[in-house]
Each structure stands twice: as C-alpha cells, then as structure tokens.
Length: 178
Image (cartoon, rainbow, N blue to C red; front, side, top):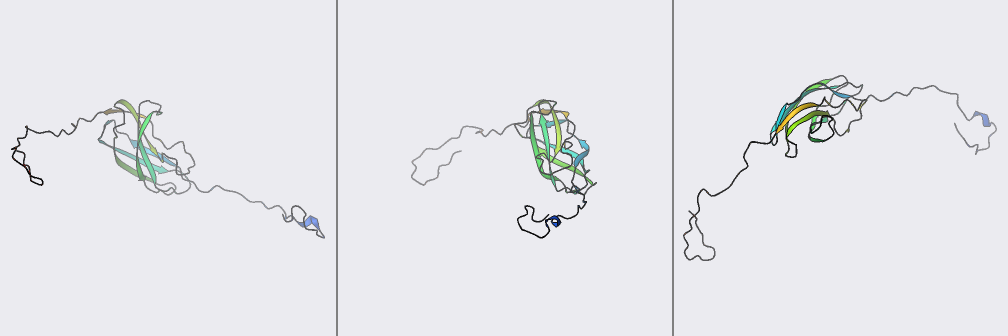
C-alpha cells in the first residue's frame, strides 16, 4: 500500500494497493534440551563432592549453545525449598537431535541442609536458552541423604607451654621461644 492517507492527489486513487500475496511464516529452529538418562547420587557430605552424571539430548529443531547444569538439594519432595549448585557450560553445544554424556563433580556447600532430603538435576536452570519446551529441563526428584562432614576442623594449639628466657631485650632484637 502506498499513499495510505490519500495525501497525494492522483489521477487514479484506486491503484495504490497491490494484489494479495500469500506467504507462510515459520518459526525459527529452536532447541529443546532434556534428560535421556540421569544417575543421581544417593548420599552427599557437606563440604564434599558429588559426581552427577547424565545424558542430555537436544530434541528441538535447532542447535543449542553450551548450557549450565545445576544440582539441587531440597528439603521437600516438591522441590520448592532447595539449595542449588551450578556448573557453568557443563552441557556442550548440541546440534538438533544430538545427545552427549555429561559428568560433573560439584562441591556440596555448607548451607545444604543435612538429613533425608531430595535432589534433582536441571539443564539451563536460569532459562537463558529459548527452547521449544521450558518445562522438561529437570530430572525426576529423588531421595538423597546429606550428612555433616566428618573431617575435623583444624585446631592450632601449642603442644606444650612455651618457655621464654627473659633477658634484657633491646629494640629490634630477636626473642626465641622454646
């Protein structure tokens, strides 16, 4: 359409529109990351590491870039009260239809609650990648037992009281304790 408001005075005002043209709009190819397989740890130690293994597939029609993966420990089976540990770029870029194994070691932070908890794994936990389906990025929620670290905290102490030979010291002199 030209001269939509008929601003220009023309000899023929009826030829300002072209014949209808049919065209089709198709969506751009979009990735869809999901788990094919997941091996959840059944136990974890606060301050220790857990190994999380999975196979991730791009079930979408377009390629996906690298994606983060997160391991979450939750106090409830619904997965609403969780502490998450992320590994940036743990999932490699995947072509449409491709899959890849993923294995990461993550350190369990001190704020993770101890006891009988639940865990799950999530691909692209921040929803940074636009996908066909954003609701299939999590594994099933499974039980996990989290225990406090049994490693003792360091304790720096004298093995015996030091003896000091007190003599007259001058500024800058060395004092030796045995």
